[in-house]
Amino acid sequence: MPKKKGFMGTKRLIRKSSNKKVFCSSSAGVTEKIAVVLSKVLPKKGNVVILFFGGLGYGKTTFIRGLVKGLGLNSGVASPTFKLVNVYKTRCRIVYHLDLYRLTTVDDVLSVGYEDIITSPHVVAIEWAEKFEDIYPKERIEVRLMYVSPEQRKVVVKTCGLMYNGLLTKLTSKLEVGKV
Image (cartoon, rainbow, N blue to C red; front, top):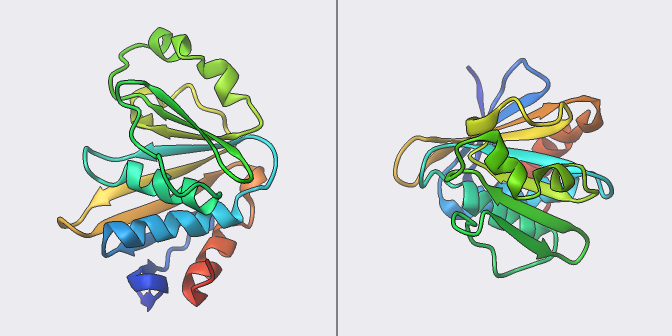
């Protein structure tokens, strides 16, 4: 499969699927930069749901830190493993950050206010989304982080639904030319 050198040490793997792009990150800093760029191409208004998949230490919270940073808040992002939900008020959006790692049932998810959060006009970032794959809206973004080595990750960004048509083209374009 052909490879193309991209922004900040990322390598874009060219895939035929128009709703999925694969990036290779060479460090936590590059993973965060990919997220900053993603934040710049998100819809400016309305509900945006981003699901995060990946094992412990694969970079889910690092990616969300970059996302929040790109939206205008430079500090305070931490995994809400024990709080379950963190809320970040950025310069331009509110971001709900949910961590489903410790939850075991759909009732547990509902008990943290999931239904109100998931339909709010804000950005919703959900870690450990693989635990409850049947409860998410059809219109969403999926970010899968895969371990390659201690510093390297494969980052797969997939869009689901018409709302995100063109988002991956914008993301890839900005990563290739280094626009942040």
